Image 1 (tube, rainbow, N blue to C red):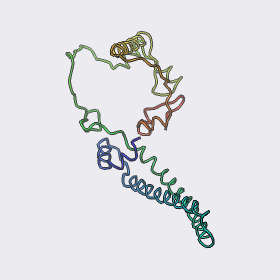
Image 2: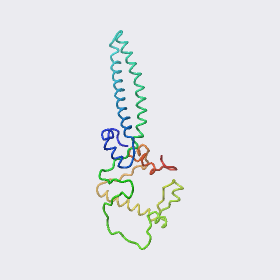
Image 3: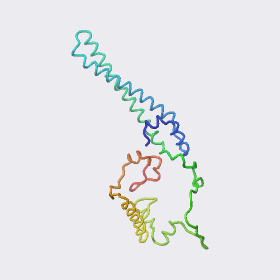
Length: 222
């Protein structure tokens, strides 16, 4: 999730970047909620500050002045709760709007909503030609017994897979090559936990936009 202050201070940039990614967000309502919350928060803090000032002055007052200070302090206290309720209601409306905003793409990323819009940057080596119909990695993996989708689906739900045999060794070899490369440059290996909370995924922009690509045991995240 983008920081609310960043969105407020770079509203035009964020609006344009969101539109580039083909995502529709009600920015007018988002900014209206944000500004209203800011106003209510200032009003609440002003009321609290005045109430604190009156509370400190009461012991020094007498007679009508003391009674008026007490009355005004109670009046201010009663006004704070409705302000907090309004803020909470607006926060509840604002939060899902902020979650709809995607992470900003680099300005140099070409615009496009389909795979066909991708631009080739460079090629390496010569592209081979074959005298037979080529298969994608999934078909090859299944045919060679290196990928097992059916058992994985039974275990963990749709869009999951097992790697098997030499493909597991190849994956581990690639990981080890990368690890050897970065440790040769001074990196100290760490093995952190692999669990992630929904709040963390929201904070990094993977939810809710990427909910259809995120999974937990037994069901897709929604």
